[in-house]
Length: 137
Image 1 (cartoon, one colour):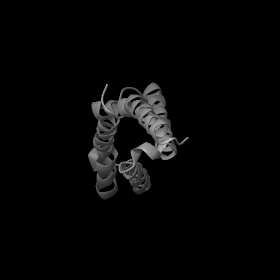
Image 2 (cartoon, helix red, strand yellow):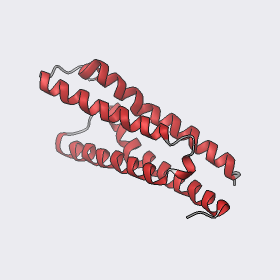
Image 3 (tube, helix red, strand yellow):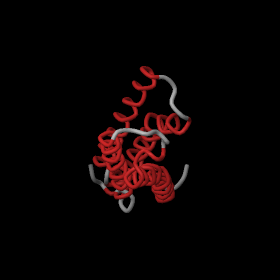
Image 4 (tube, helix red, strand yellow):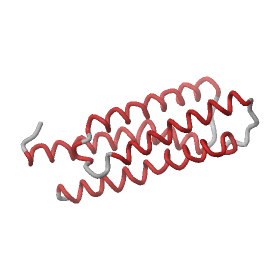
């Protein structure tokens, strides 16, 4: 079993890497709109896409904000994970209603419904180990 500090650092590194996905795709979507999909859409749909991309960017940045003291940001981490899972459930419903999207979207679904919850459970483990060591609840 890794030491507490080593496990904490591995969690920080993992979250930093995974959160780079929404940061990068969100920023790209804000700057270039639907260009990522190659679809031509109305100006209103383009605006909505950029708004949702901004939310994605914000979620990634908020995950990054937990990194310096990841062991004490359980509430923030859980809220962000909940938002990601709700988004993933929306994507899953879309999959059922409209069919299989691109492999990139399926990858997003895996991150949203599997990777994010696993990271959240890992963060809880690190937080609990920290609390036991430092006598905090």
